[in-house]
Image 1 (cartoon, rainbow, N blue to C red):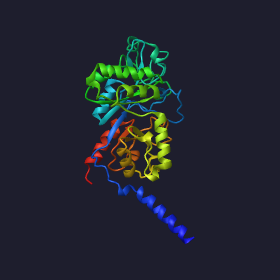
Image 2: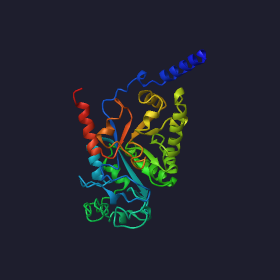
Image 3: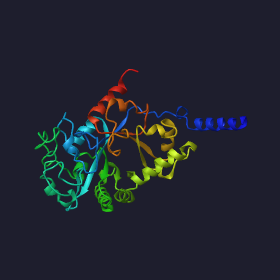
Length: 328
């Protein structure tokens, strides 16, 4: 019995030391690097969200007049400290990629029907601020302020050729990845601006096939990466699904990863990947949860070397900068 307990103690101690964060090198990172989800945008209550929820009808009382996925919103996000802006695309009937979040026009605009069933000339006539309300439809504070503001992806890249973007494909159509690749190949100056892509697996993988340098992740790969690492990471094993990709991790799930934070980051980096840290599970759709307030920001590990996903870059970016220059 004593021998068995000794063997068990040695095994537990070995696993502990092998996964000890404090024995790994702390990344030498001075400032946090932010991904601004949809640019600076109107945030909304996340309780009870489903895929059919019109989020424009549940916004918080506006503190600014910026509208998601528009050029002014992106410009403000970069000014607030975003390294990368995430945006959403849909193909149009005239071969463009419209930058707009929703599958249909009915929620945010006065238009009707699927976004992809229209040409860009029509989409340019719409008011993308039309449907926003913070009081159940009594007032619409952004109505009239978003007319003509829905951009195409090429307009975005032309406006910010020296910035970085993540493209979110809203469908499972591989042709969208082909369209993105064709746009970049026709305009090589934009190659570095299109930093990454995700969303439906077929378009994401199609884009990667054309653009090998593109940073991508897929839902299937991400699920496989995290479940395998949680099961086997105690051995130091990094699954194939975690290699050469971006690993999105919810901040309240991260402590369950073997070696979090420093050892985990080291292993992921050695596998050619980096971590994108999201907000907590339970704050609505896990794919859009962000590091959106100071208490959550304080949970980001010191020296974190990955990317931090936020829905409130306009407040979190300046607060992070202020904290980085404050006396220690």
